[in-house]
Structures are given as structure tokens and as C-alpha cells.
Image 1 (cartoon, rainbow, N blue to C red):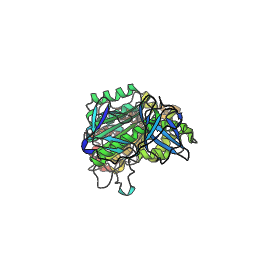
Image 2 (image 1 turned 90 degrees about the horizontal axis):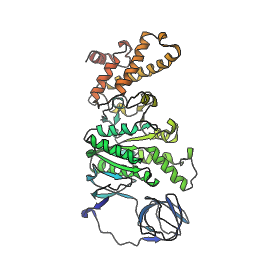
Image 3 (image 1 turned 90 degrees about the vertical axis):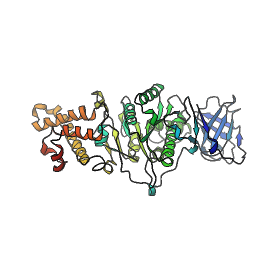
Image 4 (image 1 turned 60 degrees about the horizontal axis):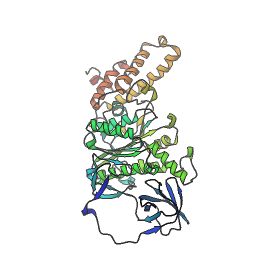
Length: 464
């Protein structure tokens, strides 16, 4: 694996004297602690040379009067307190990028796996926040070909729309389907965080089988990689997205799976630094840190390109009040929630309609965008499904014989929505999704379609 720099982007630099120290006083987890350093900068990049001559990269994490704490990107194995040298080379962690990255698979530190690539330039992985005054309002619909998302919780170009899941649910399968089914004009950057080799094999095989890898860039941080990589991988993925969006004018969708592994890595680093923990042991700055990732999505006025984010959060024990999903909900613009109950019925994707939402949806649907009846059909399905689910609970108490004929229609409606609308094997256009919606709405009495204007009922009720 290797990056090479194009001659044309290498510039002559003044010779500088790099500071080098052999004052490692402590090695703790992914961190090393130096003493007696001078004129060192926060976030400065360092090169660590072990007694065996192995070179590792690190970054200054914290400074105080006497000590410098450095996070080691490739693990602290082989580093000791006697003969290890630490050389400060200046600047922040920069990642090489190139338009030829598309179709490539990279490790969690952005290094190509089993191939060489020539870099166009190097960019800071921390990026720069988008000034709110130059942000544009997201208004363009992104078709995922997933009915429950496109029809009810539409994804909008420049939005950040997380998927809340649980261990054992098929969130990775759903993420893979979305990545494969997006239009060819959209570049997908897939940041896999804390995954197994088996999961990486699944992702790459699925992309190759679908012929989609040629429009995807994969960054894979494995579960047995050093913990610091989990903190770096999403930033490298987003820095790459910013290069393609803001410099090359591409529409980019960044899928991060999953943010829980990232937050757990952050917690481990915080514990190694002996910081005072916040709720459930996570650092008290978890909200701010997550915002530095999620807020890198958006559209900039006057610029081509966009960055849309689909982060995946596996909720520990399915607890939506856990700090990670809870804080994510404050920063992002909605959520897609997966359901254990639907998954047990064999429904894929098992999207739970009632607690899911997309706050940007109304900006991107309707006449000239999706279809004129889209919003009202969506509202009607949501209302009818909610009523039907309540009747399911009532039926358990009083029995089906006590229900009215109309109540039974709502129960049938729920069954059809789950089996033929939410559940799907093949990709569907938004027209397919809306046509299926009308087929299911015909189960209900026409007079119950109170969310839909008469003109749309007249147009679509009898259409086949």
C-alpha cells in the first residue's frame, strides 16, 4: 500500500530544524507522555521512532506546563521509555487525495490497500466548518430506491439523516443497498469504523457484485486496529468528501458505520487521558465532538457539489436515550429507526415508521421534484399506519370480533404496508413507491383519506 506525490504538487520548502526528544516518561494505551518539551503546538504531527527503528505517526493531543500527551495512530507496541525518539515535524494531520481514489479501498488511516496511487494534494483531515452565512438550504431530493425512505422520510442533498439501529439488525445491509442504488452521478464515500474482516469482505463483495464499487470509495478501520484509528477514520472520509465536493464539484453521500464504535473509541482515549467522565463514561465534550463530524455536511452558496451524511448508530440495548443517539438527534435533521419486531417478521428493511422522520423532506418533494401527491400520500400513510398499530394493541385486549369493519380494514392496511411497502427485494423509483402507496390506500374507505386533497384522490384513486 502506498501513496505517491505528483512532482507538480511538491513545492520546495525552507529547511527547518525538527525538534527531537527522547523523553518518553509513560506509555498508556494508545498514548505516550513526554516531558521537558518546548515550543510544541496543539495538534502538531510527530514521528515516533521505536528502538527497533519502526516509524509511527502521532499527534499532540494535550499540552500542559510539564507534559505533552501524544496519540499514536498505529498503536504503541514497541515503544519504550528509554530509547524511543519523538520527532516533531509540525503541522496538522494531512491526508493525500486524488480524483483517482474513486473505486479504491483504503485502511482507516487513508492508506491504499494493495495498490499505489498518485496524490494531487494533501488536505487537513479536520477540515473547516461551513460558515452558516454561506450555507444554502437543501432542496434536492435524493432517490435511495428504498420505499420507506423515499416515500415517507425523504433524503435531501446536503442533509444529515442518521439510521438508528441495534446489534443484530441489518443496518449494514441497508447501508450497502443505499450505496449501491444511488444514481451514478452521486459519489459514495463509505467510512467503516470498527468492523471485522468478515464485514469488510461483505461490503466489498456486495459492491463488486452490484457493479457499484467504481463509484464508491471505502475507508475501513478494523476492530483490531489501534483505537485512535476509529477517531481518525470518519475525519479522513469527510476530508475526502470535501475535496470531491468543494474542489471537484461532485455530489457526495458519506455513509459512516458506525458512530457508536467511534464514540466508544473516543471514550477509551478520554479514559487513557484520565479525564473526568460524563454520562455513562463518555467524555463531557461528546456533543461538541460529534458536531465536528455531522456539521461537515451541507451545501455552499455559489459552489457546485454537496455533502450528504448517513451516519449509522447502533443503540446499546436499543436505548434511544443513550448519550450517542440522544446527542446525535440534537445535531442531525431527523432519524430512520430500525425495528427488532419487523426484523423478526422477516421484513427488510425493518424501518419503524412511527418514530422516524426527516426534517428536510418538505423542502425536496412535490411538483417538479418528486410528484404532486407525494407529501399528502406520505401524511396519509403515516396517520393510517399509526391508527392501525394502536388497533393492533386494542385487538390483543378485546379480541378481533369486537372491532368494527373499518377497524379491520386498518389492520389489513398495516399488514400490507409492512409486507409490500416497507418490505422490498428490488429497487424502486419514487413513482413505483407512490403507485404502491395508492394500491394500499385503496384498502381504506375513501372518506377516511382526510390528509389528501380531493383532486389527488380523483386522479390516483382509480389509476392502475
